[in-house]
Image 1 (spheres, rainbow, N blue to C red):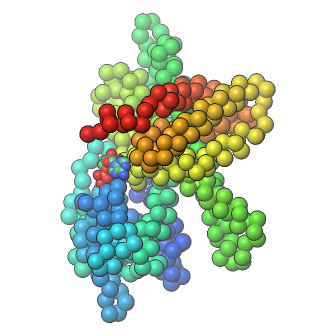
Image 2 (cartoon, rainbow, N blue to C red):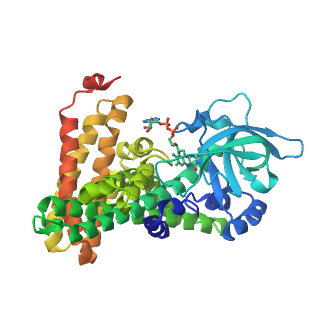
Image 3 (cartoon, rainbow, N blue to C red):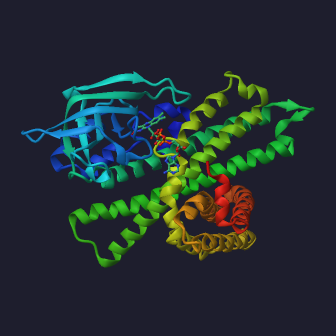
Length: 443
Ligand SMILES: Cc1cc2nc3c(=O)[nH]c(=O)nc-3n(C[C@H](O)[C@H](O)[C@H](O)COP(=O)(O)OP(=O)(O)OC[C@H]3O[C@@H](n4cnc5c(N)ncnc54)[C@H](O)[C@@H]3O)c2cc1C
């Protein structure tokens, strides 16, 4: 909620504090002594950064090459280059580095803590960006920089960075919701104020439809954000309890279930939420007409700031890569079945009927794709399948909101209509596609 609110006001500024959940990673994986040393510093306002990306290792973090060398005294030295690092001038850095000589994949990578007080890292460049200009994005040169191991060797990418990135992805999902909210507010205010043909432009169907869809996308992405945050909270609370006593079999089962749901919903909310944020920023400019293209209005900045949300912390395509297994293993379908069993007011039943019909189309589409038994084909259809699942899940979340609060009825209805069209479009594409037609698209 805090990330959402701050992003609305200034998206770049939001990146300075806690966006990436770096302190949480120290809390989860560092030694007790490291926690005592670093976490109070963060609480006192020192900044952190997450140093993963390199010139030749972006989406593919397994190819990280920054070299970590162990010293006789047990400390490490880091050498190499990191690029596109948010808060690159931070006080405390989490660094992904290759600790195992001769390895080439993720199993040779470990996570390190670098303390700026020790020196050894130069900010070689601050990027000149399209948006989030208040957030410094740096190229860093590590020159024999002293660092300490965080957690166990070889688990840097496989375990710690995966956890770190899940927190960061939830942060970007919240940032996306904040930017979406701003886009909607700017568009609504302008549409009420601007008059053409003798009336306020909000009275034209083309404009009020755009605004209603913007609001529906905004409410849908926020609903999925809160649901995902709830899943994360529950399983992390169990993890904390498990440090003090052993969990009962029921608690263990629930922890596993929530952890799986968090794993399924995090890439979905980051992927679809950031795309909705971009769409809302686009429509915000459209509603402003020519004025939207000028730098005089806030919407121009909103549009530039929105663009990064579907790129960093993993592009939308990489979110789909993470989400697709929850399509093929049935996590999403099981969640949908749970939502379906919830009670609905009679006047909202038509929304559930529509969602049930969409679920039927989704199941059919999943079967059509998986029956081919070709992973490349699943990859080709993955975005469509993940979006179908997302449309249905967000449709149910809004229905639940509408069921308990009239304020959400309009968004639940508008989103339902939109989701119906989206699901039908993807279902139609999949039903009328022959696997060999993939060749048409190949470069
Ligand atoms: C402003 C900003 C701040 C950033 N902050 C940080 C930070 O704090 N820490 C940090 O470590 N990094 C940071 N990054 C880096 C960011 O996470 C990467 O830019 C991003 O993950 C994409 O990597 P890349 O730029 O190398 O693109 P590439 O990986 O080269 O991707 C190019 C295109 O190929 C597609 N693609 C690549 N692989 C696949 C695949 N397997 N399947 C489908 N499509 C694929 C991508 O979706 C994309 O469309 C930041 C970047 C920016 C721009």
